[in-house]
Amino acid sequence: MSVSAPLAAANATPRDVAAPSIDHVLYWNEVLLDVFRHQTGESAAPTRLSRSAAMMHGAIYDGVNSARCATASGCLGQPYLTRVPVPSGAAPDPSSAVDRAAYKILTGLYPTGPVDFAAKLATAQSTIPDSVTQEQRDQGAAIGDRTAAVMVVTRANDRSDETVPYTPGTRPGDWRPTGSGDALNPNWGLVRPFTMDTPNHFRPSHPEGAQDIGELLASPTYQAHVAEVRDVGRLNSPSRGADKTQAAHFWANDLDGTYKPPGQLLQHTAIIARLLPGQDQFVNARLFALVSLALADAAIAAWDAKFRTDIDLWRPEIAGGGLRIRLQVTGTSPTILRAKVWANGTTEPGWQATVTDQTPALQGAGNAGLLTNLSGSATNAPLTLTVDDVAIFRVAG
Image 1: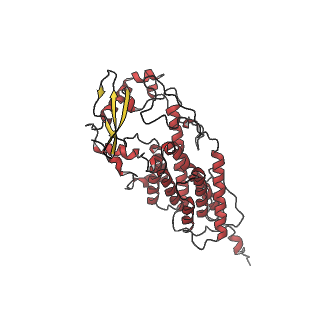
Image 2: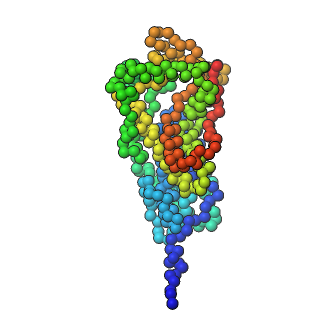
Image 3: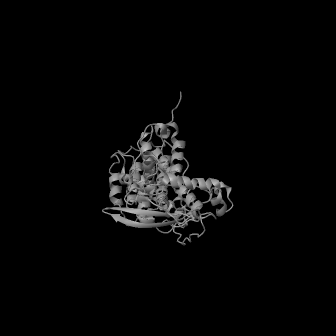
């Protein structure tokens, strides 16, 4: 006669709690984008916005992972910063972990709003099924509070508040303001990375292998690139088709009132996530953490290369020589009139664009590479990506 183990012992590890009616990771990502839309000036820089996203989504992932580790489904993967232990036999609500982690990070980063985070939290909690007990909700919330606290402590003194002014160079080729203000977050290349070993982990070598800026500017390749920028970059360039003009403005998306470049990439991630088979808030927690961490480190690496080498190269729009900019308002449409002053002292007429004339985002390649790596051929499916401000296609004549 055989004796079976008691059923309770066989099921000692609890199952996951009931799923909510919405994906809480996608929900809080939308809240984050709404926060981005309200940011202006220095607080709207892609550096700071990507740091906020990495902190929120990193804390969310650790919260969801900690809750999932306590159930029969098991962990999503290794923790990013921490795995919060839970009592044996407990089944914490992962949605509550997501909600509290996001809420605590956002209220800490943006204590005066601009979004009513308490109302957003209440809305998220209202989507959790009644079958999820208050104890399970409280356990999940405690996990989210803990992972958010660990994130805040870890990012304290990460040098994101460095305010040492940047002194532009005076040599031909040195970076200098383009008329829109001083260098934006010039010390961001000192910020402690989220995943890289050091801020200069991926610092590129000097263009063309040049030893100094003079050698670079004298190289035939560099001069050919400048000529291409002058030709293709002109407002009414016959060398640039309408599709390229729209693409440049689409990827700029940097105006106040929009979700800014990091927000656009996070929105594109959400669009793709909704198309992928088998995607739920557990998988999305990992996806958005990886994407956000990559975007944050991409900004750190870019600012390191931009402001912390011995060749802080000027922007293409200044490459021809001095730049004079004045603001002119025509009716309700402000325009920036730009006059290039070339080496021979002549000006180039007709270089004009609206205030929406922006330089493209720096983080798109990192986002695209990571999504391709994670989703493989699934990203080859037809999809429509968004832009937050359709007015960017309006170009002054």
